[in-house]
Length: 467
Image (cartoon, rainbow, N blue to C red):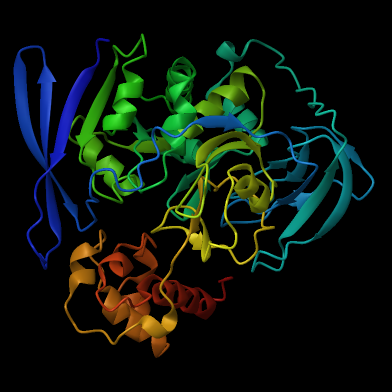
């Protein structure tokens, strides 16, 4: 494989560094030349080797469920508008929710069968969000795609972006989801010259992305080529970790792609702003667009196979799971309970169910909640910290050092508690990634992330936005 490889390794972090800096030494090896660089990442956490490592878990295809409940809000922006009604028969892959607004994303049926309910989504705070319940007919018939009027290779980027919009692909960056067609449209306006592919997985237990791409490496490279064509990028940089780089080594054509290899990557280096910073070791773009490896796979499926986004690979693990594994072909709308049962979860032992990673994930109040396009992992934990175990802030400033965006979590938590909206906004609470680094390092076990999320909702409410 004749790719250019840039290697980055994390240096040791001093005990309680108040500035919270961590240095990644970047080594560029091209031919006989070597070039050493340094990239600074504020804060973050370097976990112990092996903690939450799910790379070697077995994989298994999950059968289509008998019933799915599909929320028509699959990201944090405008919910989709339902275009089906009770009694309609739908096929898998058929659009059931039409994108409304410039920031909307289409939603599709994940099974074939009868629509038995179109009602307000009880798991969403947005009163405009509805969910569609479909009872499967067991035939799993797929919708017939609308063919191109010419070969897709001859299509203009704007036409391809239109196809992607109809496919409802949402690219998730931490707690924020952005429709991919919006990213591409913005990139055309900026005349982006670089495509950056995020192929990192730094949070414990969250290895669904490399697992999903492992058996489809050639499709991934084809998807990246398609994204490059749409963006019009002259150069492409893939930012990979040690596990995902081994997957890339199976590819045959990477001659015109630069691979940045990050060794001992700190969490949350997989966030887009840090991925872009790592990519700067290889390129100095005028303008760039960052997409995830899974989004590139879905773009290829949408363009070449006309297949919309309605399946996920989900890692189910945790101390209260007897047979942890990667579940493939999980349909959007499948209840969390079915996934946990498929992996032998001990519900009596489980104290908390978390959707997502142990730091950035959210507690699941009801196991009947459905899988969405944001679902990457499902954890069953056998112990948790309760509110009464918290202690007063001791002013140690560990949360300041751990914050990757240089915020002051303890101060912001106090401002949220007193509902000081003006100071919350002035001190940048809306920049919070909700990554959980602050709460992870807090010796008093203060639920800092909860306070910061509450502070962000106060700011949104003050602006008349939905929380």
